Amino acid sequence: MQAAPVRATAIPSVTNALRAVESLLLSSGQRTARRNAWTAVLEDRRRAKDRVESESVLEAVAEHRS
Image (cartoon, rainbow, N blue to C red):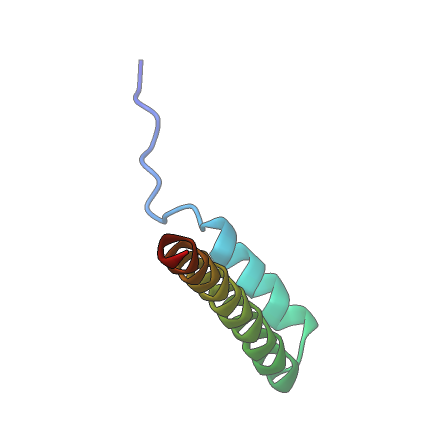
């Protein structure tokens, strides 16, 4: 009985597959715009999280002083 042949190339990750589809469907400028928009979304989420944490700290300090 022969062993199955070893695959020489790695199976692409989901991210790589999505980027390949993206490159086929979108022009370079559209890809850049989409990535910039997603980066902005992630930054907005980070700032919102920081704002919530800051509000919690300020409320705790205000309650402590009361």
